[in-house]
Amino acid sequence: RSRPAPSSLPALAGWTGLDLLFGAGLVFATVFLLGLALGLAQRLGFDPGPPLAALGGLPARFIPLSLIGTALAGTVLYALHRRRLPAPGKGPRGARLLLASLLLALGLQALAVALASLGEAIGLSTTGSNVPLIRLAFEEAPLLTAFAVLVLAPVGEELVFRRVLLERFARAGRGLLGLLVTACVFALVHEPLPAGRGLPAWGLTLGTYLLMGLGFGLFYLRTRRVDAAILAHALLNALGLALVLAA
Image (cartoon, rainbow, N blue to C red; front, side):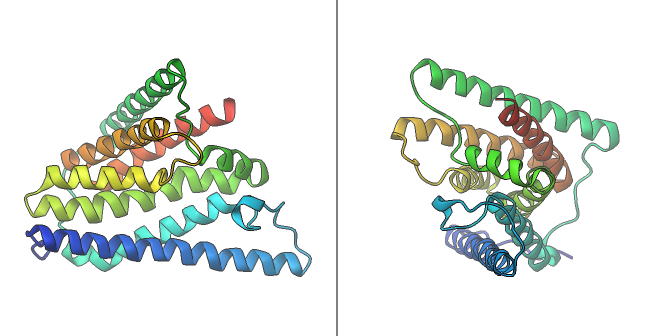
């Protein structure tokens, strides 16, 4: 049986902060160790791809490496909290699940395109700072990058943000607060710094990711099934990747 979730705000904030720090540590450790392994392989004569100076010499596979770390962090956090989590809900299944996930993905992508068009109209760039890295990674390792973006990222991020963090707030009777907190952190994880842009452009880009986090969070609260959120996230990433590669 699942254990009761902490209900006080200090306890919720403390456990959430610890989980985020632990997950971030796993991601950075994974990127660091796999980067060392690739560097060693290059010294031994195996060429893992051209270096990317802005990332301290890491190859163009930085995006896949970071998403491998994200999937690992999500899996480990889920395993640590599994006994405390309730059973999955009885949301839509089969064709209904696919249709609901597809409609959510299409709606969120339409909002993202609308915000991007609004940004262009007022002279602001809403292109995510990870887009050039994704293009470069796809050129160097298309299959690995596609697998990381379409599978590893949705699994890792939904396990962390929705199944572990949002579920903790929901079980404590603070689902709305958890929805806002997880959506904000989700946005900051994807776009943590202005990256040379002004604050208005950064804010508009953050707003795009915030809407995505809210959409996935509401879908999870509605279904109480992380596989539904993962599927919607994967479909949205597929649409986004197609637009990035087509541009």
